[in-house]
Amino acid sequence: MRELNDAFALALRDMRHQANLAQNDFPPRVSREYISLLERGLRSPSLKVIDDLAEIMGISPLSLVLQCYLHRDPSTSFEALLAKAVRDVRVEMIPGKDEDVD
Image (cartoon, rainbow, N blue to C red; front, side, top):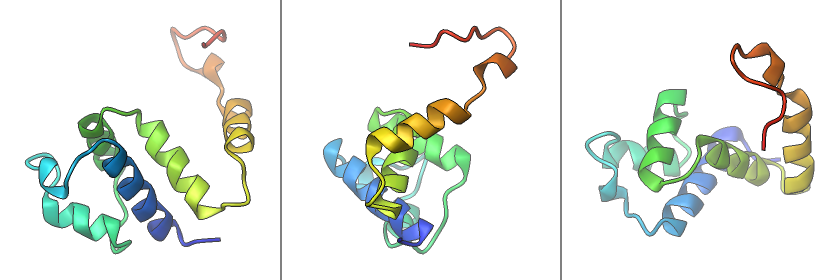
């Protein structure tokens, strides 16, 4: 199992390349230097940074986090990871949300 920072580094690099973006495409919201630190596993992003990164790449923040955890433990399948998340999330606890989410 990989360290979480290293797994996030791989996930960010994967998703950034998939979006055809360079590290220089993230400023001013996220500096190129900070992207470099994240992609080398030297920093841990905040939720705000994960949200900003995802928005710039045109993906869901959840996609970036899922990719991270798939890198962290390659023996876990995407389906198993997603099924666990679906079981764990309690939509009924969110005011104004109904349980039927598609």
